Image (cartoon, rainbow, N blue to C red; front, side, top):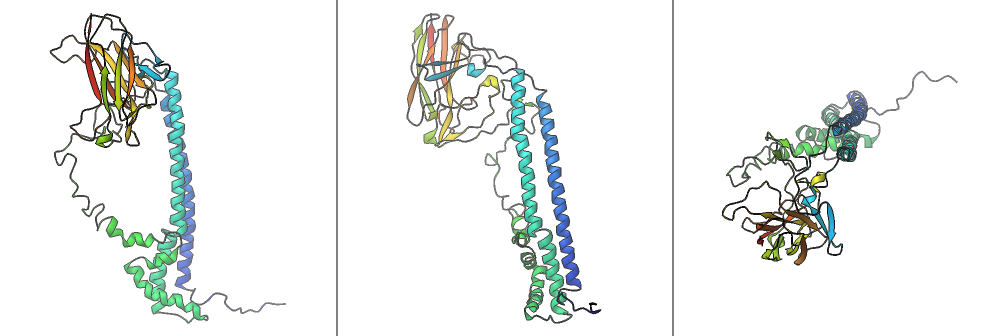
Length: 412
């Protein structure tokens, strides 16, 4: 049977001419955006692999730190006291120095856990954004299809209809187009809401463009310009290491470095830590063991990063239930003079960092056993709290006394 030479059109008349061109253009743009998305994700994954490889290669350049000077009388290494209940870290863990192999192995482990994960997360974020933007129509399907469909379809379809559609229901988009065409020109919203179902807020972004970006002022409009600088206008020298000429601190005990670790969390005044040496001898003989009783309050003694393992000044202060997590230190050094401040660099005769997974809001006491002091003279024995990175914990107010105490002991 021969087909008729003339066939009835299957498409309605309103989907013709300029409307049809616009629809085809929008579909082509959406398809192109999908190709771009796949390319971007592939490029992001490739760049992530390259960054990971460079970071792993940098680990091979690391070397073990030099051994720090240790206190003279302290038992070396890490040991326990009080029937195994209290852990003492001699010299803040400075004696347990990591080897070059350990440093490089830890570096590689960190890179694989953080750098690779970050690259994967970025690729996934990029894919998610493009699925929402391109698939939902925020960029191509919504803006092009919505704005052009609203403007052109509204003006041309509404103002200059070429023919009445055969189906009465099909006439409604033309009327909406005429009414919303102006809305697209002025607000950029109507077309986007119809153009793609993925992100109906795409038009809202344009409508609010003045509010969030330039006009209303979260960024440029002056909303934040009234915020005074730190120090109530007094000015600060710096609050980062960006302008420092010193090398970055690497977690080991090295001076002339810039520490970029943020201070972290500070608790309320009533929850700030305090410390007191409650019992100490006034006089002992040389090399005679003695005990110091140290009481702490508002200090959870469960956090310690060994200084010799790269844990010095690398962790921000962390609160648990409003209380500082950390440990406390005890040291004894000889005073060459009682009339002037001592030199800061000589190593003490005794130094331990104490953690026992105890402590809290209620005060308690820990016994510190000193094996003896080696020479005659006046010694200063001190105890002070430390957070996870060995820094004295912060206080809410400037006029609060830090968690520190000191006594003097005469050695005969």
